[in-house]
Image (tube, rainbow, N blue to C red):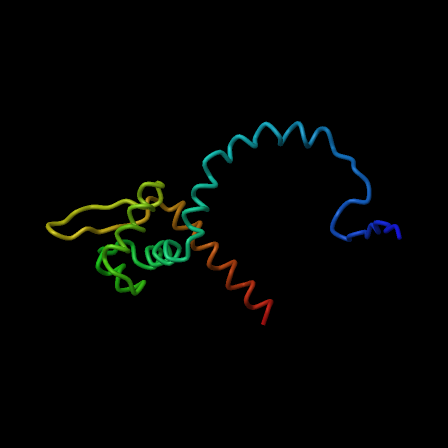
Length: 128
């Protein structure tokens, strides 16, 4: 018995393939600008690091010990995640005696995290 493949149309795709040459030629060269940006999202895709970044939007600066308590972890775990955020260019630190304080690298990072939180909360309102 032979089987036939049934193609079903989807409402979220074009029924025919065509493109606007001017738009493609205008936008395509700019795609190189996203190089490296995926690493920002990769760093923030981890729930623990996102919580830390969010905490740093609520308080300009936090000690590693504060962060550990906020995320309910050891200082070693908090330090590991903070170091990764720092290495990714998302956070910076300063040392004061025996304490190490972290903050977000700049307002761009703060805005990125804040906007993502607001967007997620809006989605929850639409789902509920």
